[in-house]
Length: 278
Image (tube, rainbow, N blue to C red; front, side):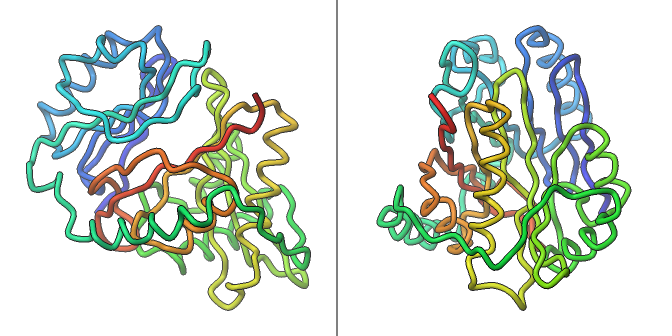
């Protein structure tokens, strides 16, 4: 199945397609509200997707009332003037609002509560640095080996190069000169936020704190750039990645049910957030 489409609308950005079978308003700017609603209605009418997800300011929620969506998650003080970010969703297929793994997700979150805001050790064995175009083919290979499906085509070198050229920041972790860990930062300048994503460690090198090391490095880079809020949208069924963010001081913001096609199936995703400065 083809990858979904990233669809610019003015200063905003939609993501849609049959891989995830949804429309996602991933980046919102208030200048585009009416245009966004027009495009969302058109996409839904044309393609019949089973889920709509909007990431919008709380103050603008009433402007999207025509979408008949309900809140799944929230990140406080996300937008200018300390306006909260709401993740509001509409399920056009009722079966998609149910998750057979809900008990597993609940158990993972209970374990994470004990780890929240605890300081954990960061590995110093690995050397972390910004990625360059010379790293792209090795990065694509590592992503390909770790994700059978992913919401974005991160296993394609051209996609990674285009992201770098368009301002996305990728970071690599090296051990004895070999790339063993990766991560990326997608900054929304209007919201002064960064999504920490695409975190992966080579399976042969897991268990040494390398994920925490690369996340810690990315946070430091974003703090230098005065980015206000860090957040992630991670697999709700994966205990390690949820424990990573809980242990790094992130707060749970909610669960997007049956949201993302990753590792071969559509899974629910958890929101974790952290103020980088106040």
